[in-house]
Image (cartoon, rainbow, N blue to C red; front, side, top):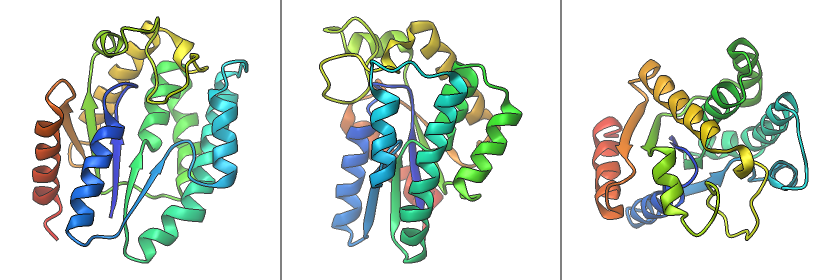
Amino acid sequence: MLITFEGIDGAGKSTQIKELVHALTEQGIEVVTLREPGGTVVAEKIRLILLESSHEISSIGELLLFSASRAELVQEVIIPALASGKTVILDRFFDSTTAYQGYGRGIQMEVLQSIISVSTCGITPDVTFYLDLEPEEALKRKSSKTSILLEFDDEELDRMERSGLEFYRKVRQGYLDIMQRNPDRFVCINALDPVSVIHSKIKALLRERLPG
């Protein structure tokens, strides 16, 4: 089973993933948790390049780096884990590429879909939990900073964080459009709800959609 979490930066994906992993583990389910970009030696090095604030990268270069990281993760970790019957929980997957590089950066969808197909080896999540949060609210959650922040502990803004509020508005709209096109896979949850409420919804919806 492949479960993915999506949402703009600051929506609380990491918190909900931890809660879900704990719940599933208590049920005796073997879980593998991963993040994008990252998850392998090569992918983690690509992550550093993508998020290092001193680097300027073109939109196409950014797309290809994210995709290279994903290809390594899919082939080296995700496919073997799924084949062995493990549940894989992934913090971001190809929907992030569509939202961030497609809607946010303006790369043509035909180009995106072609690259996504190659990098994922055709793998699609069984269910995707989308934590919906307006960029302005994400900014309030990080009120001590001057920009929307990713869910990391770095004191300086990384390269993605510097993209600005309008960029994140486009990204959120992208997610909303993707969700409308994939209603059978997506579960939309209000990220402003309390952590415990969101966790309860995720567990209930997961049982409903994947009773086996």
